[in-house]
Image (cartoon, rainbow, N blue to C red; front, side, top):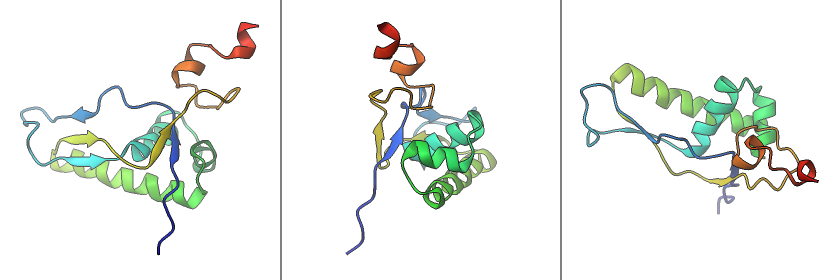
Length: 121
């Protein structure tokens, strides 16, 4: 019996979950990227985290973060090169609830808006 998948911590859901190449329709076969794959792209490529920092933030092993990241890059490349729609949905994740003093993500609503309880006192 395989080991159950561990939920990966994700800061927030993407603002846009479907990307369409110009002239394509949404009903065309799309590349589906999971939310946790999106999060690795956001953390490593957009925020500049190392794979080690990304894995720590997402509460997974570094090798797991690397596998998620590699899968996300393949899907992103396929969507760009083949001109396919990209849809972000699903995956094994849990949203950051802001309960940590500072999670290092800088993007969840609580931390982005400076609503930490320590700061309000």
